[in-house]
Amino acid sequence: MLTFGFRDFYIGIIDKIFIYPDAFFSNTNKEYHKGEFNPGLRTIVLSWKDFKEGYEISNDNLNLGIHEFVHAIHLNSVKEHDVSSNIFQDTFKELTNLLSSNQQMKNKLIESKYFRDYAFSNQYEFIAVIIENFIETPLEFRKQFPEVYSKVKQMLNFDFAGY
Image (tube, rainbow, N blue to C red; front, side):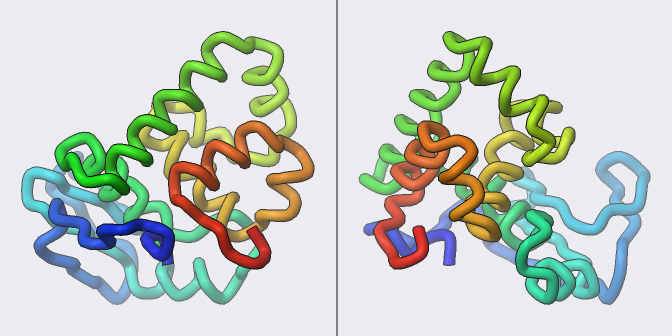
């Protein structure tokens, strides 16, 4: 779904997808996780329970599958040089520049509570969370933050009904 707008939809940084029935113990930080993307092992690991829940509740802006695959797409866009990766990476840079130069907009994003706080922990979580919102509640996103919405739409090259 996330790569529908890409010319090259292959995400070369993923070799394996592991699925556990529920939250799993991660050797990365010795804690339980619902999902993770491990670029060193080129692997996405997901809790099946939480993956399904992300699609059963379609408007809560929480979607484990989207979140973890965005991490992979983001890192893949840094490493690859195909057209889709370049568009994703260039537009992501435009978005981060827009937000770093416009403190008022950045404050509005944070204060709105439309994006969960986790989005503001780092740039990787930011992009994953805002794309979750983009996919799950596109009309609300466009209404509240049209400039940011436009950048995400461009990043994904989404030109589909409902977006």
